[in-house]
Image 1 (cartoon, helix red, strand yellow):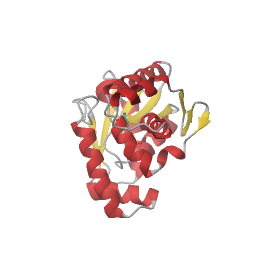
Image 2: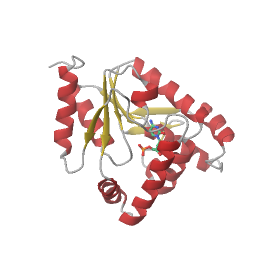
Image 3: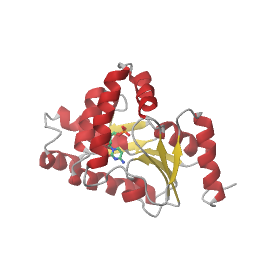
Image 4: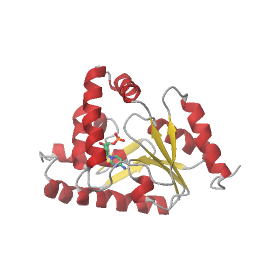
Length: 214
Ligand code: C5P
């Protein structure tokens, strides 16, 4: 079973999903880290991230293990390597290929079926688990999201903002697994909100729906 936390980059998904998982005793799943690992593997193999056929073939054969914030690619910890701007850019491209999405979604469903998860991504509530009993769609203003990302990576705000707009566009316009709120998702705007408030609001919704113990 999964609580789905979707939304655009920088809306606060990771921090909120981690916090909710901890509050409820569920396992945290960062689905973006799987697309990032695929991108890293593609770059290391010298593939063009836009080459759907080659990247899909590669993705299908990858050994990806996610454990909380740690991600292993072929048994090696790549948790830090997948956060560089080059990988972020490539992840946005590899995640548009239907075959890559199919492979990642299949793995995510297998994990979710085996336990209680709080999963964050773009398509958890719409594609990975349309039956999720609690779907949250986090949003925040463009400038707030870019400011948060710039603080994390140390890149200039304007550079982050421009790259973010381009990735948002790709996420929203792609044919498969496009970023959108599920019809039955609860939309929460995190602009100006404290993380702790958002976490307790979502945890409270889960308790109220009988998904987690009171
Ligand atoms: O969330 P994060 O920025 O780490 O995601 C990395 C990339 O993976 C994003 O560009 C996004 O397009 C893609 N992604 C996706 N589907 C998900 C999670 C992430 O396409 N469920």
